[in-house]
Length: 99
Image (cartoon, rainbow, N blue to C red; front, side, top):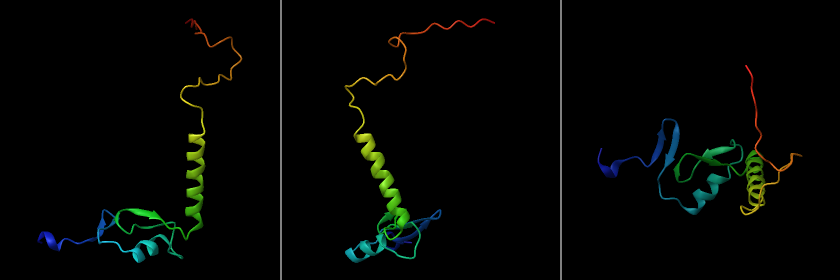
């Protein structure tokens, strides 16, 4: 097979790929496929992407957004973490183990 005859679409080990030049219609229709599962083939590249017509995809997006928001609104790096223990300051503790 010559270089110009390589297939632009197909699967490798069960993972789809598509290297055809994308157009706007194909891009939009690939992200909105009612009646399909949560994951659909990517319009360009290798693998799968979320199907925005599936409610499960919106749950995944909401969970990811909540985790991202929680991570961004966490304590600053300059602040010391709050110690919830009621000990006297976090000094080292000597533990003696007898046989």
